[in-house]
Image (cartoon, rainbow, N blue to C red; front, side):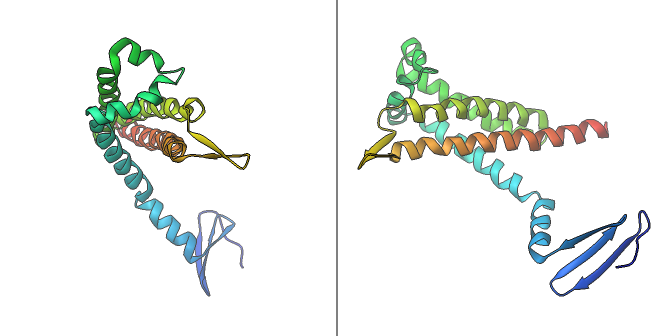
Length: 189
């Protein structure tokens, strides 16, 4: 390949790869990396994770405001050193309503975050606290793990709780995305 002057761009097709030289660097882009770049450019990961999180929070939050929803989380909340006090203070139904309201509030903040990114950051902070708390329940909830032939496995309850570890990661990702949008909004002002 010939030498490229600073700022000069040379494109060459070679089989399934596109070679781009920019400022003396050569970058090979296969069809897979081009696809990955297009997905990133169109913000698809952010859209899917944010909409998915919003739907999950609205659905779970509203379910916690029902009697079966409240009764379903009693063993989780009661056995957690981070949340046991909540049901003692408020009782299971009001305590569950408060948890549901926090989930719905976070979902609304994510929705508002599309227009005002700082609201999305606050929603992400709320869900980080929520999902850190519920992730810790894997350790504290009886029946979250089971022993089969001396080997510990996660039960269905443990797997249900483990999804909150992934949701914790998604929360941090959304904070990052809304943070980048907020910085762009501030720099345009």
